Image (cartoon, rainbow, N blue to C red; front, top):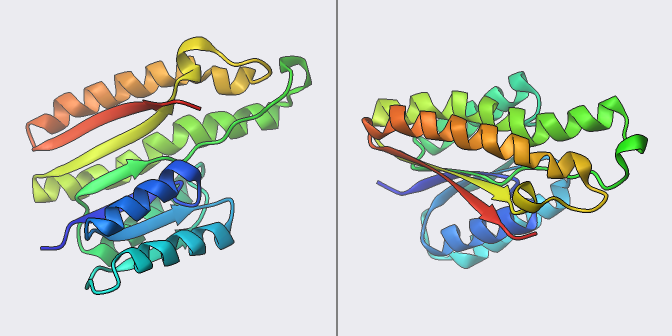
Length: 191
């Protein structure tokens, strides 16, 4: 059976690079992105070029993972199109650069929903598929700014708080999932 991966934030630098590497390894891929359809299509093409003689399936879906309903629909469509999911790689996230005093409530909620709520919405949808197959891997990409803070990025640096919640959520999910042969990890990237 062909290995499969669902990658969020696939139009970004880390998500795109991971997608291309997994394509080279022969994975079938569902590439999810929201910010740039053009970049997502370029990553899709690069993935297809990375395995020209493969029978792997590579497709892209655009949508907003910070919206619970939309995230659920995207994950469901991705997994059903692939047939199963071996790896769920969550790279989606945003930042807001500016002073705390200049940040609107809407801008604050955009960061919270994109960087925290999307993790919950996606895992809530992908875990049942993995449980039904009794295997899978979940990997979340986080940020070093959650540990040290960043100048003029108060919302993004609050990833410290978000990162703690993600780590606890993923630890709990890991304890629950380990009995079902599902590994759950978080990786802090350097920004």
